[in-house]
Length: 433
Ligand SMILES: Cc1cc2nc3c(=O)[nH]c(=O)nc-3n(C[C@H](O)[C@H](O)[C@H](O)COP(=O)(O)OP(=O)(O)OC[C@H]3O[C@@H](n4cnc5c(N)ncnc54)[C@H](O)[C@@H]3O)c2cc1C
Image (cartoon, rainbow, N blue to C red):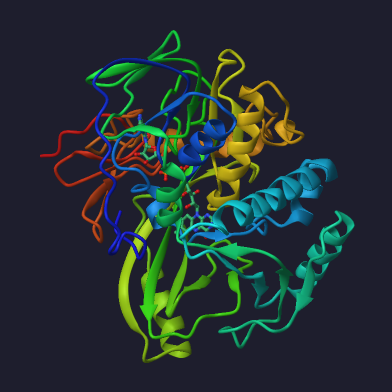
């Protein structure tokens, strides 16, 4: 994926895996989650190996806006109501600790780490945000309400999280990868009896972490049934003075923005793969009003995995696989979620317990309605008779005209015009006439 972060950033050059290896811990996937897990485990003294299908950091993490915040799109007041106060408190604490962990780690590295308060603003529901502040205060966090929202003259206020941050994700990954044993261009095809097989080798491990964005073993964990992928568009405009905050709107497909030096990153969206969207024209209108002279540097579309209750799945891959772990479903908040995963899984693997295991447990009970809605939507695409079909579970693919790709609306796999896989869970290419 090309983005502001990949521009001028040299690709990594780790070798592919050839032959048989062994390790205490194998990490599958070299995005923010996988590399942070490897770094945390290595720091705890574990002998680890990381296998990456392509190049480190060049998949979803390359298209992030890299805001480090515990203020996520799910309102804590909603989470407390739906999942209980203890869960909301655990989620908040885990993510606030993750921000502190980033400050301690990234603050010392060459990765353009900068402190920024984060805002969630509203154009029409200030009472909802006042309630959010009250909930956060009751949970013990010093959030506040402000009417000072840069770039959005019609905002009616925002919730402020002080002490949050932003950084350059690929510079950070480069710094924390140092000393980790990594093999690139080594997609894992299967895991059997704690051995992961690639096309040219294998790694036997005592513990395995699957950090492949969308988990690729369908028979365990049923992640295809309890996650959706959704897409968002981002444009980088240069010639804009640095902003003092990062911000997101309080609606599902609302705007979000941050600065990187004198470049404004402006985004919005929340649409399923394969759907045409007019997000870039919304972004352009916003920019014309705020900074008519700013020049576009680059634009990209990226997607993330969304869980049914807004909480990531971090823990045992399934109850039947206690030595295989997963970190997925970051709901477009993968910076702190990856750090939460690194800390939680390192604690589990090294024999201590994280206080947040229950909050992120992938086997937690799910409400029936969202599960049924997800299943019904997938079933609809499964019985649609058009071709080509996805190599993952056989859903009807949709042609994405603007990007020239074949996209799966059910599980989010994407294929290039010639049928090769761009993004999983699909592992095999498709035939395109
Ligand atoms: C537009 C947009 C903006 C965002 N902005 C923010 C933000 O400001 N703040 C924030 O916190 N979050 C943000 N996010 C979310 C965040 O970017 C993601 O949650 C995070 O980058 C996901 O990291 P990952 O490691 O799970 O996935 P990835 O970066 O995709 O890494 C997974 C890796 O696994 C590899 N892989 C896959 N299958 C295999 C296999 N079989 N064998 C070996 N390797 C494999 C892939 O090649 C890939 O490199 C944003 C998301 C989007 C879409």
